[in-house]
Amino acid sequence: MKQVLVTGGSGQVGTELARHRWPEGWEAVALTRADLDLGDPVAIAAKVAERPWAAIVSAGAYTAVDKAESDVVTAWAVNALAPAALAAAAHGAGIPIVHVSTDYVFPGDRDGEWEVDDAVAPLGVYGASKLGGELAVRTACPRHAIVRTAWVVSAHGNNFVKTMLRVGADRPSLRVVADQRGSPTSAADLAAALATLTVRLADDPAAASGTYHFSNAGPTDWHGFAEEIFRQSAARGGPSPTVEPITTADYPTPATRPANSLLSHRAIERDHGIQPRGWQTALGDILDELLGTPHQEKTA
Ligand SMILES: NC(=O)C1=CN([C@@H]2O[C@H](COP(=O)(O)OP(=O)(O)OC[C@H]3O[C@@H](n4cnc5c(N)ncnc54)[C@H](OP(=O)(O)O)[C@@H]3O)[C@@H](O)[C@H]2O)C=CC1
Ligand SMILES: Cc1cn([C@H]2C[C@H](O)[C@@H](COP(=O)(O)OP(=O)(O)O[C@H]3O[C@@H](C)C(=O)[C@@H](O)[C@H]3O)O2)c(=O)[nH]c1=O
Ligand SMILES: [Mg+2]
Image 1: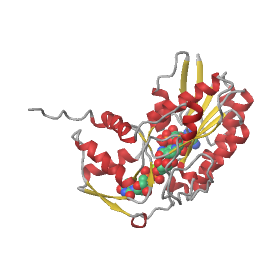
Image 2: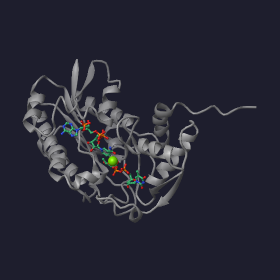
Image 3: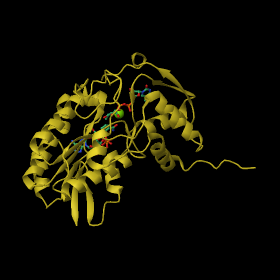
């Protein structure tokens, strides 16, 4: 059996990597905090040396964007030093690493989609620490895929879909920012793409390494995302409050977020043939899991 070491096993992406149907002969070993403390580089090296892993998927991270502003050292330990330790150990073991990064490495200060080689300039500590992780992986382990994703949602863990449903159940109307654009990403769809990249990099010496973008397809903003969540929620008998569009200035937060973080999928399609589906369809699968399938239209 080819075993893949997965960090962040209790997170959204780690959970979906564990649930994913890997090809015959492959399995994901999803490690939680209790199995491996990502704040401990020595423990990371020991865990990689423990057995003959086929590959590493680095999905663990410090993802509390606002909290990171005042918890800089922990954010950098988990998001930069831990990937460095994983990548160095992967290289030493002769295996590839697939590392998950973020749209928040971009400044978001122009329209259009960000390409993988566009200049990065993070606006906050979380994005900066994730960029540190990217640089560490790129330099320490040539056999790698760095996969920047965005706005990850799923039926598990903390995410915008679950927050909207929870808050929307208690209030007739919500206020959500309409001036931050991007594309939502289903953790399950991302896990499938990560699994494809992992198997390709491990099995095929000619498979391309590099930096890639994966999100679901199509643009929106957080307000548009919330509206679609409640449109699809209503069809399933879930909450459907009204959603008032507001500006970023109306919703002050410790961390500054990019105004536009739309990711181009050109590179991942070109090198690996991966084509994401639309975000609305992917959202439907998540709401099916959280709320059940939509009620049938009554036919006369
Ligand atoms: N969520 C999002 O919107 C986005 C996420 N990403 C990236 O995708 C990847 C996966 O994110 P996602 O699954 O959503 O994140 P989650 O916040 O759902 O999960 C993060 C995971 O990392 C673990 N972790 C954090 N600190 C430590 C530590 N010190 N030791 C061991 N484990 C630790 C958490 O464990 P515990 O549960 O114990 O805290 C959890 O399993 C990350 O690299 C993230 O940066 C990129 C873009 C968007
Ligand atoms: C709950 C809520 C949020 N918002 C805003 C805040 C923020 O700008 C936006 C989304 O809220 P979130 O808390 O999900 O945002 P955030 O935690 O910044 O989400 C980010 O997480 C990290 C890990 C990433 O890598 C990014 O891709 C992105 O997904 O919506 C409202 O306007 N109204 C609300 O009621
Ligand atoms: Mg968040």
